Length: 447
Ligand SMILES: [Zn+2]
Image (cartoon, rainbow, N blue to C red; front, side, top):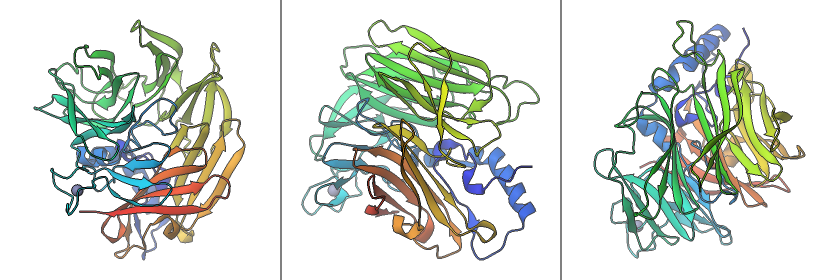
């Protein structure tokens, strides 16, 4: 049996990123590690609550704003001057980092506000991330039951508005992956979710187009059976380009088989394009018997459709692929190296990934970061000391960390970190693409 580092396992849920669960001061026997790894693989998705899934976040804004719009980093977005983020441990509060001054904190500005309440300007009751569009921050929040409201505020946190109330139930009872982003005057709500009214059967790949204009109707772009129950074993990635929403999905080819075992079988992999004008869904590529899954990021430009995928059962194989426009088969462009698959993002012309390793079996603990341009040139290939990323030394021997690539402005790459040690903290960390130097911009402690 291939030995898989714990931190490389697909922990399902919105939990991708890289994780460690370790007993620091105890040596764990190899056989126990192997069993734990297997159990984690099978069970961890079930153990995540919706709240935990929701806390691992992000969102999007425009198609080519440099930020990743996927379920792993749906709490981060930005403008030229500012990075906005939802701390993983405080996801109802927008925080910001001013890139020029380094100033950061809750996006409030109210004098003497103590923050943390619903009257604070930074408060958002978001369900699936924040996103910037046309100079405003947008989010979808729960209104009545499973109905939703679309909200927005100005970039300084003022001028909160309710832009539209949804009359249909659009939010699922539970989900495994969810995110939203705004583009072309429309909020796209993307999820792998369990049922709510209209979400039948359970376990669906689901995408809605919600126009910002309340007069325009909501469109169901995709509602597709994916798996027998809400499970980590289906993925969805999206990108907007030239009047189309591109969708990359994978789902188990035969989830009803008694032999079905997550992460081992064949997958249906499809790349489709939804035309924003005609609302037609066109299949650009499909493999009904694929050995690849874990598709979490997608980017499209005039040279083709770029995405990640991982070979089933070979977590050391994390590749970036391209389907040239009009081509019938994708090509492997380059590998991101072993075990990076859990956190890969493509945005702003680069592919970035990270992997926390150690300290199993005497390994030195560290954070591996790989960043390449889409031609494959290596920009960053570094291993960092964890403390340089704002990850505190664990006080109780327990450490749980997630590092998620969130986006780039061409000079820096931004990562969102969530660290359980020392009571829990979230941080935005920037990496200089020229020098590789990293800097912790803002740390937010758990409430
Ligand atoms: Zn406040």
